Amino acid sequence: MSDSTAAPFWLQITEPGRSPRVVTLAGPVEVGRDCEDIVLDDPTTSRRHLVLDPAGDGVVVTDQGSANGTFVDGERITDPVVLGPGHVVRLGETELRIVQGRATTGTAGTADASEPAVSHQRASSAARDLNRAAGKGGLRGFRKG
Image (cartoon, rainbow, N blue to C red; front, side, top):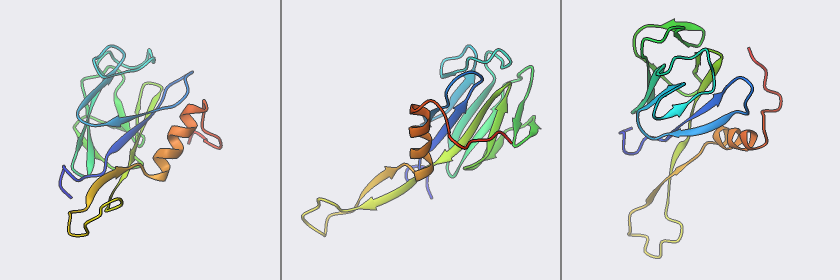
């Protein structure tokens, strides 16, 4: 699948003392306590902790020399790592979960069947559930593992 038709990635952010939130990863983003992109309210993270870069069928995570490190599925990383849906990144007391939507195509509303199908990006049911849970202030049945 090429980058232009890859399904979008979302990031579920769970910070201490805050409701989970979900953001779309449309391009490279920096994550930390004092940065331009995703700002965390977690004093155990570095000011510019890591960079997430959606690339093809995955998201590349790169630690930016953080003091407390970056962990992927419980293991500390020192080099860039490509992540897929379901991977969990831990920085300080914050967890970032990678979620991917799915690309769909359709011709709904097209009068002429000879016209090309229109490509749409649709959130997976998991991403929709995360957005609903984040809007209600928490995830029911969610247990830290």
